[in-house]
Structure formats: C-alpha cells, structure tokens
Image (cartoon, rainbow, N blue to C red; front, side):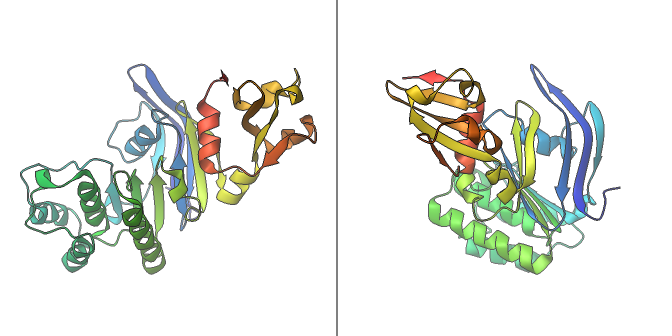
Length: 279
C-alpha cells in the first residue's frame, strides 16, 4: 500500500525489453503535486509509466498505486479502434469508469473543437492527443498519468492544455505525472522532477532543488584542465570555446573567467546524455 505522502511507490522495478533494461529503479511520486518525468528519447520514460500502470509486466519489483478507476491515463498515440467515432470511445471508457461524467467529457471536446461524430482515424495527431486527454479526464481522476500529452500541438494549444491541467489540479485536489521531451512545458508547471537516463533514475526531487544542483558552464578552452574537464557532462568544444553541464558543487574547480549560469531543464537533459563533442 502506498503511503499518505506518495501517490505511487515502486521498489526494485525491473523490465527487460530486447536489448534495453529498465531499472532496477525506485520511484516515489509525491501526492498532490505535478511530477515531470524527463529524459532523452529511448531513456525509459514511457516504459517506466507503462510498467507502473501494469500495461507491461514487471520482471521484478513491487508497485503500489491508487485503484485504476481513480486514475486517468493518456499516451502519445490513441489506442482506440480507428473506425470508432469519438462518442464510441467515450462509451467504451464510461463502461469501465464508475464516476464517468459525460457532460464533463463533452465540455472538454468542445474546448478542443472535437466533434463527437468525428472518426478516430480522421483526427490529426494533435486532435488525437486532445481526445486522449479528454478521455483521461472524463471521470475526474485523482491521479493523471500523461505521456507526451502536448506532443504534436502548437504553442497556443500547449498553453491551453497546461491551463486545463492547472485547473484540474486545483478543483480535484489531484496528482499529475507528466512525461515530456518538451521540457519548457515543465519550467513553470512542475513541482517535482524525475530524470531518467539509460533506464535508471539519475536524479529526482523538487524542481527548484533539481535545477539548483546543476550549472551550465561555458568559457575559453584554456580554462579547461585535467582536473575540471572530467566534471563536465556533454562537453562541447569548438576551436576557441566550450560548454556543458556540471554539478553545482563542482563550480570551485573552474576559474573565475568561466561563465557559470543557472541551467534550463532541457540543457541538463541534453548535455547529460551527450558524449563529448568537438566542432
């Protein structure tokens, strides 16, 4: 049983998929917050969410999460029959969701400009994502798990979706897990961050603490030496300058001439998984 503080707890989770292995990882998702799950493509974000939800069978480990009738789930691509109409998809969901609110679902579709008579196969990628979000939210879930929910959406639509999630968090006293490669969507939205790379949880914690633990460094090549160069993740060098990501605790290893700035989430993710490069 998960604790009052955590909405999801996974211990010693392992999943083998061909040449890829997820874990072993421990995952504690705090209740009542927006948790962003970040990492490069292929890092294991989707496998983690699918395994936690039981859509993939875990090879090892234990998982505790709320009853599935209180959980709303939306993945990047609709897993619906292509010849269904939108109203058919809603009817299928309603059959398995005791607290389904058809009027709420219809309001969400109207907000997204989706007609209940539309065929699933005729929806664009962005419209398909919006439909999955509407279906996931149709029963006022206390836990929303969303995998790349803003993928394929234009900036205005992404901003509208984020506003919708904020309203849901306030009105439902809910928890939200939001996996995305569009890390800018999380900068002012997430409370907590889980960073996955190579099937492992590299870092996890409150967003502000996560960002404060890293720094973006850039300077002249002559500022590099045998002591500080190994400290840089994703070191990029051209003929005169370098840049990369370091742990903030390692800042003292660099001379005052090196610029050390607060990083974005994207800079941390990109540099962390990149090998050193020279241009």
